Image (cartoon, rainbow, N blue to C red; front, top):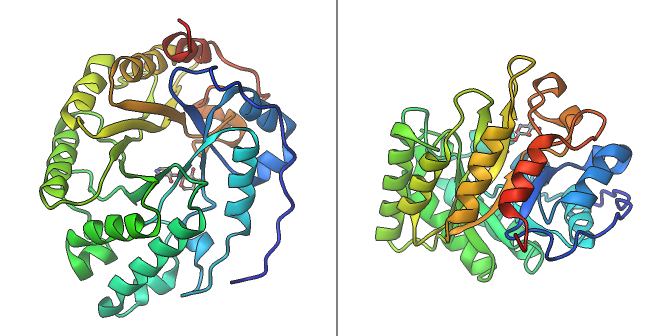
Amino acid sequence: MRRDHVDPVPAGPRVPADAWAKPVGSAITLDPLTDDAAYRKAFFSTFSSATPENELKWEVVEPRRGDFAFARGDAVIDAARAAGARVRGHPLVWDLQLPGWVGEADPDDLESILRTHVETLARRYRGRVAQWDVVNEPLDEDGSMTENVFFAAMGEGYIDLAFEAARRADPKAERFLNEISAERGDKADALVALVRRLRGRGVPIDGVGIQNHTTARGFPTRAELARLMRRLAPLKVEITEMDVVVERPGQDPAPAWRAAAEACAAAPNCTGLSVWGVTDEFSWKGPEQAATLFDTEGRAKPALDAVRSALRQNR
Ligand code: XIL
């Protein structure tokens, strides 16, 4: 364990437990949470769930084999919990933001490497992380299994192994598979088929994350999202990483947000909706894409009202 140190994030106000009908969250990341007042205020005054944006990724948490660094993850998770937010852990196994040593490892070692990584994280955050993205983005654009380093060594069974290891280490946290660009079309079909195979093999999966990175034009409709949520039942579903790129000034992102929030509100198995980033200033898409619910100054956009009217308590 490395003795790295990070100062705690100053706490903000708590969002009342009944503010939302289902958890509504955001990805949060340490530096703006510590340094940017607008970001911190927007997060603490709005959201009831939080996902560490990068702090739990393999390259951050286990940069060298067996050498775990949790200071950044701890700081983000503790800040979220101080705010009363539920925490989504993200991700345990993913082929991106992977340190070089994993790619260079002997394939025969990968099973043990994967197990140790998953169990160490899940065990550390037991009782603090409510829901894990156990496997992130296993599918390619065309819906086939991505032939990443884990797949090359173990085939699809790497997913089974990861879910079983997560259950062993923290039986109570919910275990999700999280996927990108699978809201509709062929990749949605491939996602449903993969989940059926996993369930058929008895893999302990509780839910499916639908990222829903999208644009103000051509976003997944309420009906499309509702259909996918239905097809994934009885598993849980969350919209895990939504953002809406505004390609041209004048385009209105609110309909995209309304579609997702209404689909989630209406689906009994939809357990929450998260935005990928608090303010546009720190969005991974860049400030000019205006993809989040708060502008670069931290002012709430009308799209937040669309989410509120679908998902607030006591409608
Ligand atoms: C992104 C982060 O937002 C960026 O800061 C980082 O540089 C790359 O990853 N799908 C996921 C997220 O599951 O982890 C990704 O987050 C966005 C796409």
